[in-house]
Amino acid sequence: MIWLPELLSKPHGPGDTKPKLASPATSAYVVLSLGALGGGVVKASGAAGREGGLTGFGSAIINLLVWVVATSIGVDGGTLTQAVVAECMSCVVCAVPLLVMTSAHRTASWRLILTTTTFAAAGAPLGALLLSRLNARVVELVMGCVLLLVLALQARLHERAGRALRDWRHGSPLGLLGRVVAIEAQMLALKPGVSVDRLAAVAAPPSTNAGRDIEAAAQGGQADDEAAPLLDGLAAAHRGAAAGTAAAFVSVHPTRGGSCGLGSADASRSTARARVQSWLARQDWPEFRRALLYGSGAGFTSGVMSGLTGMSGPPIILMYEKLKIAKDVVRGTNAVGNVLQVRLIAYIVMGVFRRVDFLLYGLASAVGLAGVGVGHRLAGRLDQDAFSKVLAALMVVCCTLLFMSAAGLKGNAS
Image 1 (cartoon, helix red, strand yellow):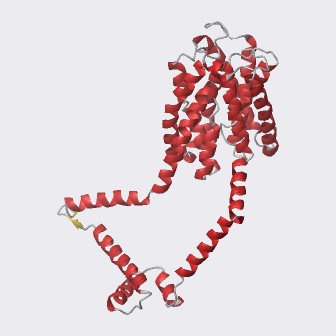
Image 2: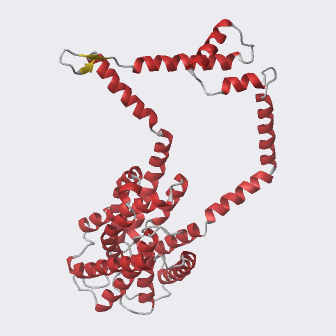
Image 3: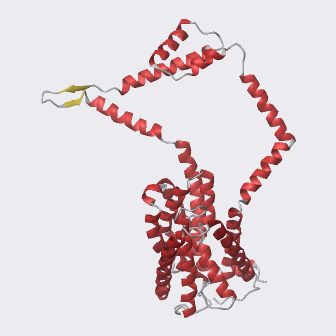
């Protein structure tokens, strides 16, 4: 067993067990190509729109699974760094046809793309730096923990834990006290003295005449003490709406030349201001703030995780669940996000992307693109439930092998 401080103290990265400019072994081409092929199939099956499929999720896991199994049985599958960078290149190439398959130009949420990509660009260099500096066993340990998180998300453990907590609170004395307080508040809100017919008339859809009648009733003192606040509020709303309508009206006068123009420059500016205010009023600002809050956290975390391990799914999955994003929007957004692999720039700048590995990455990308075609053809024939269960079982095996390798119980060919 190798302790974590010893691993962290080593300045070299996962690929330094071989000469710096050594060409990849032939077996590395085979192993990483097989991983890219499986990843492409998973991508396409998710883009086909079947239940449970999410574009881009699972491809890095398949690549990692093939690499871990190969190295565990003594086959040289390349270094861990080569496996991560090859998966990144394959993501970029394979995501291009997925843009068409998912109709990303219509379905993608560009607000989320901008938010997550911006913050992922801040986190990716940190992940790439850790990948180039940490020992392979530390990276494998992190990958194992990420896989555990993915398994927990797929099993909906967080939802089950939330339901169990709510049930416990519901049956606890604190929950009973809260329900009693809520019932008392509802009873206090139902004050006597206001007839149901009067409240129904007040709650009816407003019209011009109704607004005038309400305003007259409020000014004439015809309302009783309990209903007066309601009538006053509606009367004020009617006056505001009428004033807004009058302010928004722009006079158009014919000119001598037979054309029509605005009454004045002030009216033109008022019209432009009214349009801007109308656009701002139509925006869902609370939802925008929620998207910024969750998108920034998920983007930065996924950037670090993708730069270090190639797996950025868990924080993005949680973001989609919290924001309740539709599945077609998820697929389109992920397709665009796979093209915008900002971690690739960090790999190039930090020297992780080596020239001697160009052929390896190119072959893996081409095979991954072929896998997208195969997966697209098989998508209609695959049983997504069975496929998800098989993928979960493979992730359990991969997670176990990663922890064993990180603990020094398995040999590593890299």
